[in-house]
Image (cartoon, rainbow, N blue to C red):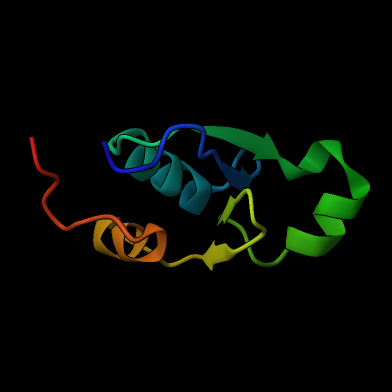
Length: 85
């Protein structure tokens, strides 16, 4: 498992954003507890992230802005490159 129990992540994006779709596919392939947040549903999120999406955020408020790949996400969360069994 890449994360400690209870850690959650949020992927900020919106419908119709091809970069957000790429980020969502990437995050789905990782052993993370996460949820997608559509910024279009909230004016303050739209203002904050409108030109920056997709953005991955942890519960502490740290953010990883696009572009990112699996290696960047693993480094950002502090996970080993190859998880141990």
